[in-house]
Length: 418
Ligand code: NAD
Image 1: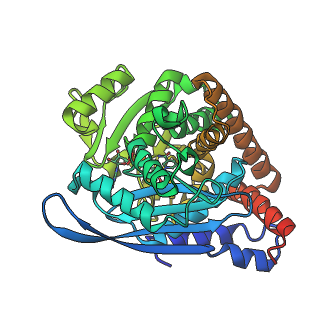
Image 2: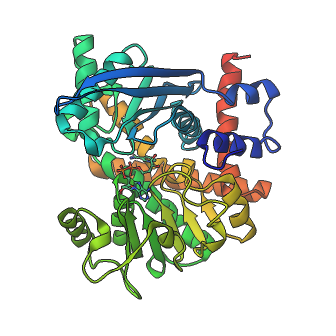
């Protein structure tokens, strides 16, 4: 099995809970593959006059518990197997946080940094046109992921509404607040990650969040909001990074305030060039001597090769699939605790669910209400996973996965899938 193939890794994770699950073999077999995989070809004349045909995907893994739900990624590395893995992880994520959705994921193989905003808008609209019959508020609801944001979601909503002939905000989540987006959605994934960091620090390290150092890889939606929330909680952010590299500050925190950090990264175009910091590579960041490591960029960052060099006692997975199964074994033996992605970064899809509920009810909740509900659902899910792991004497990843798979199979069974 290739350690680089996210779908092989997702299947290996599923296999790792087979012995603790009380499910029939036919359900296990069904869950190994998505229900639908759609590949679309997107020809586009770019504003620079050249023509290219992009490839897009939407993979719908399982909808036993509710409509398919999952983000849309724009990245040159997007491949069908990556989207398949991400769609399966979405099924587990919506189940572990216990919201009435299934799992899906989408992607376009594109480097968005090379396209103008106009090109990105047309590409997004063509993607919606090609998938017009595959998405809908009660069928499949996309959301932001790597290199897509609330603007991308606004284009999706507008194109879908244009095709349907009426305004349909519930077809997509992560929209701008002005178009029916939820208060608190943009920070939700990072807020959920930081709640998991706080809970895990108290339970496993027996420390207060104020007394720990944290390194965060990735400074996009998830990474930056995790840093912001952790700074608010009083944690010391020892290092941050983005695609251009990382920065650390010996014996101190990386910046005196989150606002300073955001301002510096905007001005310099990267967090790795801030005055008074020491430059480090992304791989060096993963090996720093900190209490907590939060990978919040891409998958396959902690592997068989570098797992033995990870010094953090606690890893909280902001990104999807940042730790390979081989690395998991090494870290488990070393006693490193890992709060798995399907639990740690589920705050985003949770608030997406809140957004969808508000849209269907033509309602708008305050940020306090959204954050209050996020806090209580995240801590409940964290404690359920922790208790299950203690009861079954298994790690948190297998506990979260087992809870999720059991919930999905219960819905499949009751609906008579086999
Ligand atoms: P983003 O595009 O906003 O940010 C990605 C960040 O990673 C950027 O800072 C980028 O510079 C950095 N990066 C890219 N390639 C890198 C590399 N090779 N090494 C180091 N850093 C690199 O994306 P995001 O929405 O923050 O998503 C990050 C991760 O979190 C992904 O795995 C995504 O699937 C997952 N996730 C996102 C959400 C969400 O709500 N956005 C929800 C759940 C999970």
